[in-house]
Figure 1: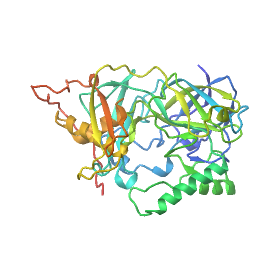
Figure 2 (figure 1 turned 60 degrees about the vertical axis):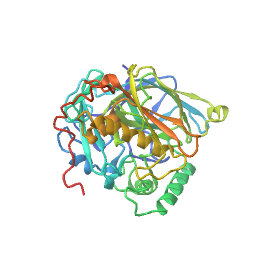
Figure 3 (figure 1 turned 135 degrees about the vertical axis):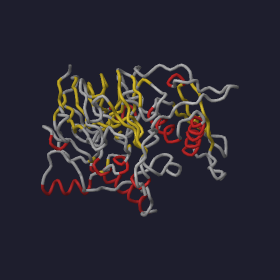
Figure 4 (figure 1 turned 30 degrees about the vertical axis):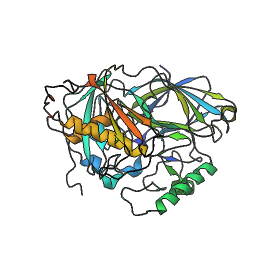
Length: 418
């Protein structure tokens, strides 16, 4: 096993660990350790809410999830020899739940998926699903099942939802300016258009005093992906992947976290992957001057691993850029994907699952989402592919009609969601 460079004790909160990570992006957050080029390391990762979500049959914790506290990131790690303009190579050697542990912390044999409430971030389908719901998944080997969504079992595509390098001071300023300008166009919107810097609940490694206060007021939130990578939620970042990150500061200052046992394309419920804590083994190296050599001045490029589940039969749904009210939109691929997902939800509901169960399933299972046509005015076309083998019943259309499943207790809904 590689050296554990960032250990976590499951019995302690994130801020009481031997090493303190962070939950904001800023170039002045001090590295917790230095990684040598050409070496391999194990990094423990806490689930993104640091234990706030419980293994129970209530969604009140999803409704009240402390969004200001995310993400609980491991790092930053200085990479020996990395300088601005380089490309940082990260090989994902292995990734998984907390090894050999069972307990109350997500990753100790279980994980969760949640539909976020409209007043706390919302989701991809927030207009149709404004309230908070939750599903808990139990892990057995590489597969998972849920008491909240009976009748399905699938192999996870385990991956880090978030990994990235620190921004330079100039890049951070650019982020805050453009996102602040967006917020200003509709400052009272619910959910908000973006998340501005927020000192409340900031975790900034070893910073203290006036340095802490300054960085807490400037640090970018970790929720969205940006030029440095960040919270891209790419389900294909599995074991065996190689990722190339732009380097903006001396040492690169690499951070990671937000591990998922599985996820559908888009993480469509916002808390859409099966969230968990766990570990990731990485190998690091550097391509000197790689940003200019390969034209990678922003956003990571990657070579996906070959360790995802092998499903061979699919049922696919399509959608176009027409709203539910019949309004025509021009080549709106975001809307097209929403409509494809809604068609899949309506279809699965015919088998007995609630629409909330279907939505949670599509966020967690390894569905494939694709932009299938983006040039034929006025309608773009998006598609979503469901692996039929994950279902206990045959979901393919037939003359006999849908086989009815027992939906069990259903997906818990938060009490008093308004």
